Length: 247
Image 1 (cartoon, rainbow, N blue to C red):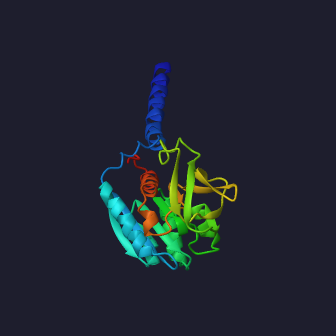
Image 2: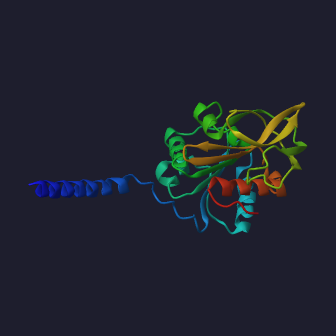
Image 3: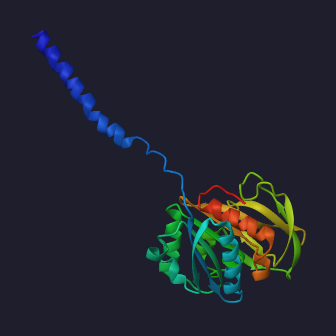
């Protein structure tokens, strides 16, 4: 009898151990995702009033094409490109738009897309798109207040650990400097002086599982052709897309 009871006990213990194996495997951490390869599928969307969205888009597209790292879909003056089904194929959205209005479908489409782990890069008037929209301000990380006259000013890097600004200390730029209000939780990468006060020129932030990069530079096509504008913005694109930053 004792031997029979012992056999049953051992068998039950074995069954219990076996029953836990699928549960342990199911709850185990997922293996790391393979490294991203191939060109970055990018939506380049420009438009809106005041600024020359087409000319700025042309300058930026030419700079991106030189790298050979971006598969670019170019859209002008059509915010419906941000709606969920249309934006879904892209790893990165590069956006330039001044004032105007955005539909709820387009706004939620791009915000949810980035929150799921994609990248978003905007510059200059990206902080003045859809003026007064609190959702957009939260998404970008700040908003436009005003600007002095177009001039040459110094940009000083304040965050050297970021791959976007690594190896850069300061540079001069001819552009329209934006005066901005911004969320103090963003990571400011570089500043410029305005009336004796520092004003952010570039920052990064998280949005859910995704990444957002903003640069205040890029008022017109001429400004977008400058070396340091292109270098920092394209580095920001790599970073936002989760790729290794390269020059």
